[in-house]
Image (tube, rainbow, N blue to C red):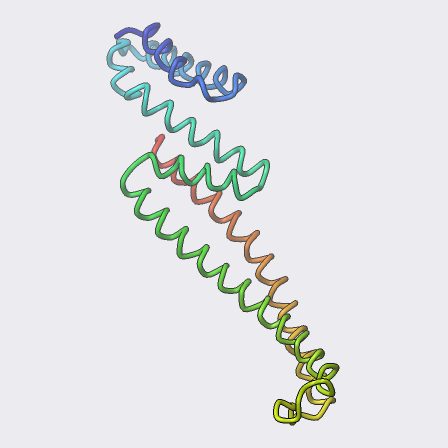
Length: 189
């Protein structure tokens, strides 16, 4: 395989990457060939150094998805970036997927607790309002001020926990993007 064939193969593999990124990648590749040729290496040696065009293209595709997730934060873009990174190897599949499921479970638990506190606080308020309408054997033996105080505390705690969970979600999103970028940089170099 020579330089032209390698570049053509790489370009074919990069079809799903945006055009401006393809141009940058091919320019970098051409520049790498020029530098290495000036050092006296042959085209075959340079191609061996660079590796398989499919694996290079796969790395750039993953990098492109990470860029998209970073520029347009959304759950969909994050899942695509993580899925792309997992395709790069067995280690990524085990490590990234396992960690991601653990983090998602933790966040889901925090949101569930926050919503439960908010609902509990609201129900504490409504228990005072509905108390006169309940049958005698179901009456709540709690003073109304106590019920209102507990309701306020639980709602406040729930709202605070919900806001903290939202902040933590944004922070974890940024950490995942940074990890994926680091992972791709380690694979490419």
